[in-house]
Length: 92
Image (cartoon, rainbow, N blue to C red):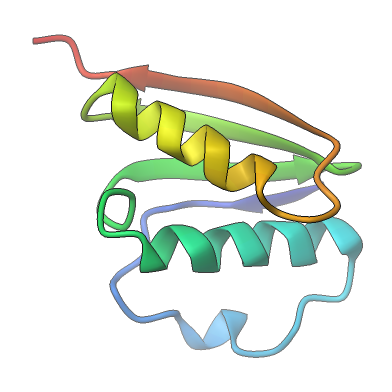
């Protein structure tokens, strides 16, 4: 199991500078990189967890469009078998 909190600053912390060892960690890292490059997703509070190729997205996001985009980003990573999108849009 790999768990990556998506509460990171604009720059990738040194912890992630080396390639992760496990397949799940590599998938989480690739998704994290893609989300950081996306202006719509980079400032959202999304937690990424990967278990046996299944991405679990959790957190509260600003709108349903952000949830949909995060889901699409996760599915775009080669090696992802399934995505469990638990993101909740803010209630206004």
